[in-house]
Structures are given as structure tokens and as C-alpha cells.
Length: 156
View 1 (tube, rainbow, N blue to C red):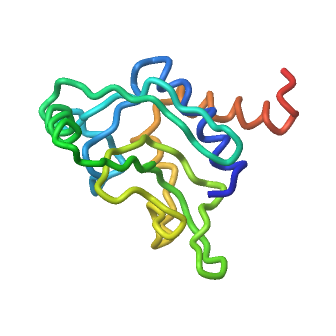
View 2 (cartoon, helix red, strand yellow):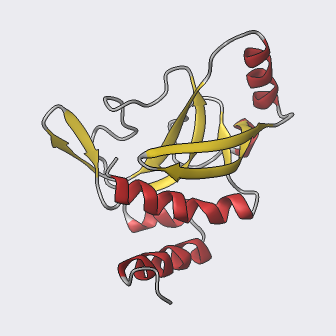
């Protein structure tokens, strides 16, 4: 993930955290849509420190959340992996996330993402119709405002 893209998406994700909509699932689903019946946790904080993303999550008392709780209590080390949509391009041995990347959430997984494991390695590009299914109109407007503000150096 290029730092500027990841940083932008972490800034955009703050709205979901503030609105208590930053939910994630146990395992990555096949869809970019968050399925509430599979939600296991809610992200309470996500921030970047240098090139590293840190976060705080709360396991919920949902069926998937209870499974995650039992796994943790049983000593299972769970990974956390971002879920998003967008294109990738090949650079040497790596797939690099494109500027159209949109962070959806963070999921609990057995094998977390690494430099060699991106979410959309096939280079699938999301179109506007798919993005409308994921983000509400107000979310899309906020993204545009954040992007304009970042291009102006944060000046409003």
C-alpha cells in the first residue's frame, strides 16, 4: 500500500469509527459488503504512526464475536487484515494498490495481510455502481471533501 493512499483511507475511515459503523467480520467474505449477521467486532480506533497502522477493536457478543472471543481465550493468535476494493498494479514482485483503493473495514483472519498478500491481487477495479453499494452518498461526499482538502494541504 502506498503510504499516501493508506493514510487517505485511514482518514476517511474515521467517519465510520465516529458513527459506530466500523464493523468487521470473522474471516474475509467473498463480498465487499459488510454482512451484519457475520460481524464479530467494531473498530474503536485506527491511526497511522509512520508507515504502520494501529487500531483498537472491541469483540462483540454476536455469534461471530463469541467465536472470536473463544478463539482468543483458547490462545489462538488472530490476524487482522484490511478489506477494500480497487485496482492493483504489478511492481517487481509486489502488487501495489492503486489510487482508486477504498478501505471497507478490517476483518479478523487466520493469516493477516503481508507485503505479499493483498486483498485484490487480481487487479479488479471497482466501478461507481459497486462503490454506491458500499458507501452512502454522504460518505462519498466526505471522501471528495477530504481529497480536495488534502490536495490543498489541509487548508479549508
